[in-house]
Length: 121
Figure (cartoon, rainbow, N blue to C red):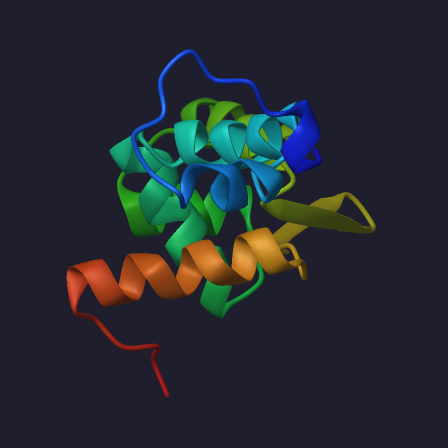
């Protein structure tokens, strides 16, 4: 968006035009909002944090989080649809881990900064 395209009803700041030029596209905002929405659930947040540090199967995730396997599977599906985790099949077993992308990486580090926790060694 160029300065000539910016026509706001009120002029409050000379900085507004510069900010509006950098305003993310709706698709970008939608991607980030979806990821953050999924991490708004405490169970998904715990599962995501766990998968940022190791690859695990549903049964082990369920045991670690004291949830049922169907509940974990539901949360995993939502996290996967949001692009935060990936899966791989080994025989009959599915394994999950955090996605290797900038959104998942940044959210992982943000969780640890906010909670003041560190990655396990």
